Length: 281
Image (cartoon, rainbow, N blue to C red; front, side):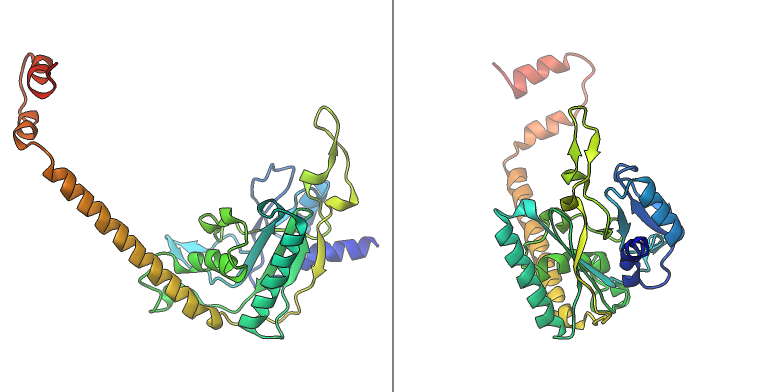
């Protein structure tokens, strides 16, 4: 039984490409702060020291940049469906089912990602074959396309049902995955002092579907992603033009002689000049 539990906690590592380590992890003991782990055994030791509470591991290795340049391909897709964003659990279950069907539709019937029940929702993990988008000519003109890709895919594949907080925050540095056979601290029992007195079975993070080791390419998503980037760029240009027009209109409403006067320094009685000329009672 102990060997099976150990293997379950190691299961998540099978999704990663080399180099696996070093990689950041976080636990209840670190209060969610990420710390570096240099091996599987070191990570498991820290998980056990935290009583297996809130054990997470980053989907991406620690060193993804070099001199400010991205060197990490977006080769892991992460979707977080949190119960708090749905009215009831039935809606959550339908969203999970539809997301998995859409993933199959986009990538093929032979694609089966991992699905974990976190106690408060589902997390879907899909390793993919991808290149660094900053090095692709069609995406090079956009800002941080690889990071934008993992943000966009989470929302696109879930029909915008995934955790909305990730839309502007998910990145290679904070793509933290729940570890199977660990426990969600939000569901533990506490006494009046806030101390943990019991960890119920319902708090356990469980595997509901295992990845079948098939790593699809991201090509089926790139056309939609490119359209999204262009659309965002056009909207940004439109916002800038509106802002420029507002500035011009605002500039035209200025009274030039007052503006000129405000630029002329005077040695004394400045406040009286402002009172008499600019804002008389």
